[in-house]
Length: 265
Image 1 (cartoon, one colour):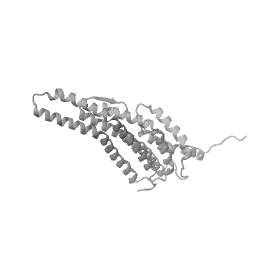
Image 2: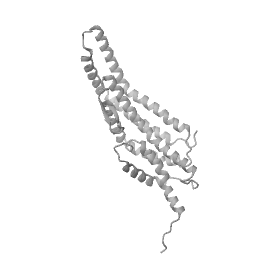
Image 3: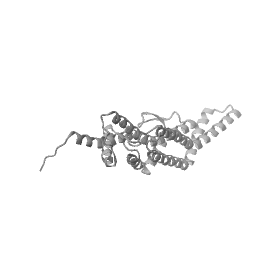
Image 4: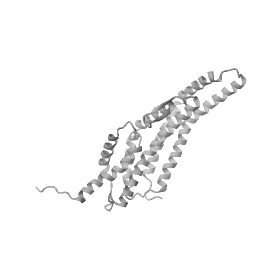
C-alpha cells in the first residue's frame, strides 16, 4: 500500500474548490434575510458559509488559469463577493420597504413617538414598522423564500460562472432600479391607510375651524389613533396581499438577476 502524497498543486486545487464558492456565499450571508441578522452569531455565519460552500462546490466550474494570489484572482474574488451581496440585498430591500410603509402609517396616525429598538439593525423603528417587518418575515418563511433564495444562489454558479461573469453596469443598475421600485411598492402598501388618515385629519381641521373652543389635541389625537387602528384592521387583508406580492416580486427579481447574461455591460 503506497502512502498518500500531496503536492502544492493538489492543495491549491482543493483550497480553490472551496475558496471561490465561499466568497459568493459569504457575500450572500452578509445581506440575505434570516442569514444576515445581528442575532445570528458571527461564528455561526462563518460555519454556515463554509458548509454551503462545501455543498455547492461540485456545481462550480473554476478556470484552470485562475489562481488566488494574482491580480485576476483578486478581481474575481471582489466580483464574487459583489454577486453574493447583490443576490441577498435584492430581497433585503423588500423588508426595508415594509419598514418604510409602517413608518409612513405611524407618522400619519400619530404613533411616530412609539418606537422600539430593532435588534436586527440597532436603530429605532416605529411599532407599525416592526409589525410589518414581522409580517414580511413570516410570509417569507411560509413560502420557503429562504430555500428559493439558496436555489437562486446555487443556480448563479451556472449562469454567472466564477471568473467569467464579467458583471457590468447593467447588473448594478438592475439592483438600483429594483430598490427604487421596491420602495414604491412599500408606499403603495401604506397609501390606502395614509389617505384615510389624511381625510380624518382634514375633517378634524374643518371641525376645529367651525368650533375653535374644542381642544383639538385632546380629542384629535384619540380620534386619529382609533381611525388608524380601524383602517388597519379593515385593510389587513389588502396589506397582507401587498406584502406577499412584494416578497414574491423580490424573489422574481433575484431570478432575473441571476439569469442575466454574463458579460452584459
